Image 1 (tube, rainbow, N blue to C red):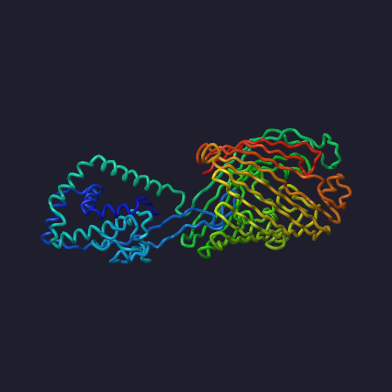
Image 2: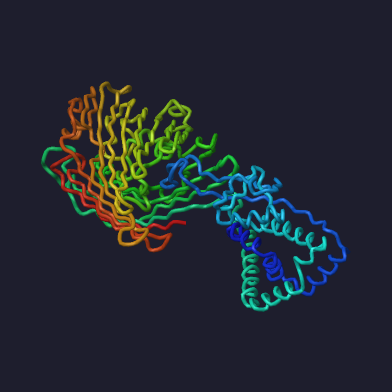
Length: 595
């Protein structure tokens, strides 16, 4: 592992080139030589008693890049295909005799004169193999030592050849005076260097891994629903004791996600993601087909057991294309880039519906393959194929059970507007689209082939206001158990307020309609008529009788860089697409720890 001294190399060049005395002073002061020894060495060199035989060693530097969204945000197990770590070949092996040979150096650069002096006058600065100087790149201790050694060799050569006008007793006296004048500061500097070396040794001895990093998010949720009664099953305008919400007690639970990111090949930027998850929240109401409307983003239970949520390998195939292949954690929501940059169950909206367009959850994909292609600065394309039960050889596998395949085009017409257009095709069983949100169940026991289209628009009006919207449409054809088609729609409009009242905070207002069956003409098992008649006459075609309106308000207050607390309110008007049901009100206080 290489630890860097983050010093701008152009600043050092200016100092070294402006005065060779400063260079000697730096060496004398930091390394700790004394001036009398330097004087003796100079005398010997002037008598040609020693020869110049230093060998400039080569150095290698590893520059670590930012973990970004080549496949997008690493949040909610999602939205990334590759995180680039750039491996730069930094062997300083190309000798240059003129600064003009360095292709990235311009005469307008503020350190041009200093660099020109070191290259053309002293000949102690070399270029990289690609004939670049890389003046803005951080300098490592090894690289600094190599450059310093080369310049010291040149000074020794100057002194040995008898150019006594370059160094005299007055110069050495000046160096000694400077050393005495700045003795306190130099002592502090030596102490800091020693402390840094001790800390570095401790880190090397105690680090978890040289190739693996740990990321995590722990959510504590305090939530509850106000008392309400539904008119459902049968939906007849009469609310009974059997239709009272049974889940109105205040609850406190958790959701924990841990991700291990291992980098195997820095040059190709290949990484392995291993995600673990545990939770204990299942806020059931006891009402048929109603819980998919009240689902929270961080809700989910593993019965306090640890489960595997992600096991995927992501790698670049070119400078602008990457692939993901995995046995877990591969789905449209994990591969497609998200225009809404605040989507997160821990630090974004509260509800599951407000995270992203629900059609991106079609098929509940788990294992498969995806790609992310940056076509140009403003256009990218993502694609995915994922199976829902890939390890089941009898009713699942990669192609025999539920699956989803899709493609998304991300367009950025201006710097402030992000647009996503997506198409998905899925096969699902048990009568569900497997999104888990709104009218996810669209038939009773049938299997469906579904085509879905959707779009998301995100407009950053200012650094403090973002306006966004999405819409989705699905059409499902029954292929087993019934015949006919079912159509659904959903939409959302939202306002985000980044840095509201304080930097790092976030306010949000989301209003929309969860997925709603707008048409169902199945030969049997139509959900709207099934709910209307308490199970009878489910062969009657039709749509849901009303539209649910979802209103969500939340405010993320960042206590520290790693801890935030989010109070939120959710109102569901006409829940479960039923106008005769009570409005559902949900209050939450979500506390998120990121590490």
